[in-house]
Length: 343
Image (cartoon, rainbow, N blue to C red; front, top):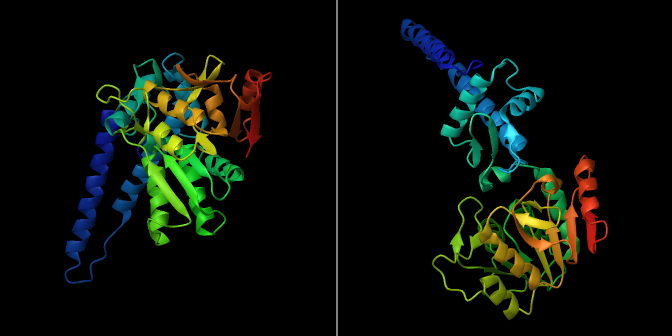
């Protein structure tokens, strides 16, 4: 197992691996006609290394996830946290740890994270690794979200990892005929893909009584796979496809909206300006608004608010083992017209 991430350590592992492979080859050649037995030890060694690196990258992303540029995490604190999780217990200096972080960044395993040698923080949240966080929590939230859906509803579905789980759960319910005649408007490429795969599986045609899917137009953000209005080259006159679709369908009966964090204790926020307009249109054109967030978002500070806590809404989240985050959020909305619901 690779335990020393210095150049010499990696060279030693490579040298040992080459020596082992040469020894196995020599033994095979000396058997002279005997059946060749292929050893899988080298492949297993590489598999173990890949699994370790992937596990380490997942853990670093999860630990850094709550930290933004305005409140970064110190590298020394990150190393302590990694070691507390049973990883890199033999690394005792920041220099070796930084070399490892640099290697993980070069391999694209820490995309979206910024490290300057002293601090590290999330600059951009990436869909590929967001979906690996709190997966069971998001599934529980999605299951509870079904309580807000009835047959015949028009549903507005935001982009995001939690709303993707809601799309998957809707598919499950339609598959077993709990719901029918649903109209779903979304800006999520993965959610639309899930819903359309179900339509194909069921052999649905244009005229069907189960499911109709509407997807908004615009630019697709590669890190979130969300369709957004890009004002840099599109003239929209302030109107988004969400507003056009939902107005044409008579408004959404319910919208499920994600959030990246909290703005100054005043409302739900996102990391960039592109998705603000979309979320505001979802909120405005729905009769019931459900903010779906895993509890980690309550402690994340974001700069761009899309809805104030002064608005009436439902916040659907998960409580178990997250008492600190939940109590913090309760303090923010104590006198607000917000219905806090737990999955």
